[in-house]
Length: 549
DNA sequence: TGTCCGGCAG
DNA sequence: TTCACACCGTCGT
DNA sequence: GACGGTGTGTCTCTGCCGGACATC
Ligand SMILES: [Mn+2]
Ligand SMILES: [Mn+2]
Image (cartoon, rainbow, N blue to C red; front, side, top):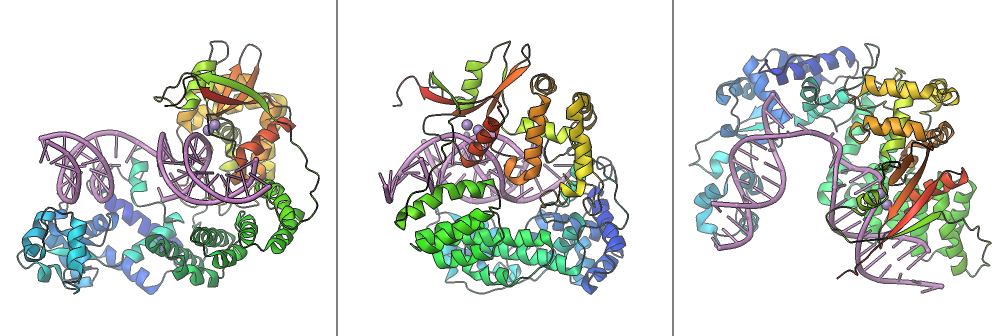
């Protein structure tokens, strides 16, 4: 705990300074001149100026009206701003476009200032802006836009620099400054994992810049919806870091999907072919098919069949190859028919108040055989509890700050291989019955801590105890090993419900399908896995008693 | 005047 | 800071 | 049946507030 936010009105400043110190202590060799200047300059500012700066950094946007910077612990914003203006960290004459002015001014203020040009006083703000945009193309300060306003505007420079510092600390831009106070307040707790004092999120300057580059490209794409504009920048970005390679591949894939939807098939294909995303190749095949390049599609599909990246691709190939062969006039191949899973048909009264899954729970639930709506949470949760020490093992590079939900390399191919012995030690407990006690103890000891696998609020103690009674260790082991084979792909698709029979020490899983719903690919794969290992799983098809009106 | 939403604080 | 899933429409056989 | 697009509930808190907008 860095400080008690309940009694220190400057808690946010303490946290920010803590991060600056952290970065200064670990990133000395990669800090740029402007970053070093910022860190040393910040320390020399008056407290009120530091505090105002941090408040503004933590808020959204670039421009802030003085009247919106009311902080009792800071006092008069104009006083606090003085030193920041002198350094050029804040601006009070920033040129604004009309759109920015519209965001800052309230509707009545806009009406008062622009009444001469507003033809429809009852219209929406956005309509006014459209109307006036052509009339007022200029960029000028708020004072020039609205001389009568009589209020200062402070504009934050160096937002990008602060994002860079945030990235260095967290190793991502998804977490933010407020994570620290949320942890202090106990709203989020994180497992404590030892790491060396020199541990840091990013190895080198190039990684920092690379992350920011991809992030900026994604932002531009999402803001503009224009994939063409960023595509070349992403294609040209070369990187040797596997983590950044994955981020690049993912962005290329998403750009490709966008272009594919827009009908730009050639471009989409180009992006898919440059992406290492696990789904990229199957999308390539599909695009070739849509372009009626059946021979090329089939060739690529056959290459894929020699070494599918995962089960999902294999599954996709089983569908697309026969289709392509048909289109090419080739002989049909023998089809391997999979046996249909156990089937249960129900006819229930329609009730729009609750989901179909919950209705099946209500229908099947008995005192002797309780049914729980768990989807992925039960098996993932049990896995997370048994393998807790392996998942949170202090491997070099896996943990580097105290606010991590899981290890940084969780989705790397070699996540398991880097921890083989640790995982085997956990899984071995399934052979001799120790796992029950271990899972129970971990549950008690770690309850509430953030985990990539355990959703505590979906795993009440009663369910855990019952599940441990009813699920055979051999099945747990098979599930966990499957999970470890490909965490990303195999952590989803598990059946909706589980019914436990404590007296018989058995169970069955139930995937619910309402009218019009059908099994998804990942659900089919999970069903096939369960069937292959003689695990009890049923697909429950629900019809409504009264016909839909 | 009521509702809804996004931003903000801790 | 989405993601996993359900639901619905279409196409083609 | 295959496929793709869209909607939904949930995520990582909870409560408060200002402001836009709809409706009357
Ligand atoms: Mn489901
Ligand atoms: Mn279902």
